[in-house]
Length: 182
Image (cartoon, rainbow, N blue to C red; front, side):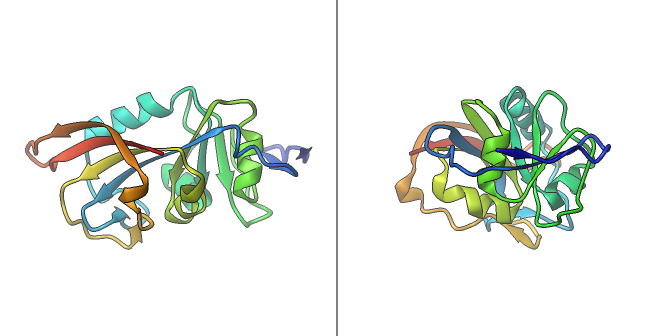
C-alpha cells in the first residue's frame, strides 16, 4: 500500500497493489424506485425518514465507499464511519476522507474491516456489484423522476434473506427493506 502525504485538508490519497476483495465482504446499500431511479439532480427523489435512519444504523461503524459526486451531494464526511471517496480527479481532497483512484484502493483503505459498505453513486455501484456479497436494498414503490439509475440487477443470482414492507404514509411512499445475498 502506498500512502501519499496529507494535503492539509484532512484527506489522504491511498493506492493499493494487491486485492482484498476476496477476504472482505462488499455490501451495497441503496434505495431504488420501481423504474431503477436512485437520484435526481444530485439528490434523492423522495424523502423517507425511516430509510435515512436505516442507512445510518446499517453503515455506522463500517467503512463507506462512495464516488466523488455522492460525497459532494452529502456535503461532508459522515460521522462514525471511515469515508472513502473514489475519484479520477488527482487534485480532489476533502475533510476527514480518504481519497482513492479505484475500488481496489478503496478496499485497501478500508483496512481490516469485515464489511465495506458501498453507498453510491451509479458508477461506483456498477464497479462493486459484480463483487458484492450483500445488498441492503430499499425498494421504493413508485416510479420516480430522475436521471441516475441503479445498474441492472439479475435477481436470479441473489437470494432474498429478509424483507420488511412499509405502507405509504402521507407524503412518504410505500417501501420495503430487502436484504439480498449470494
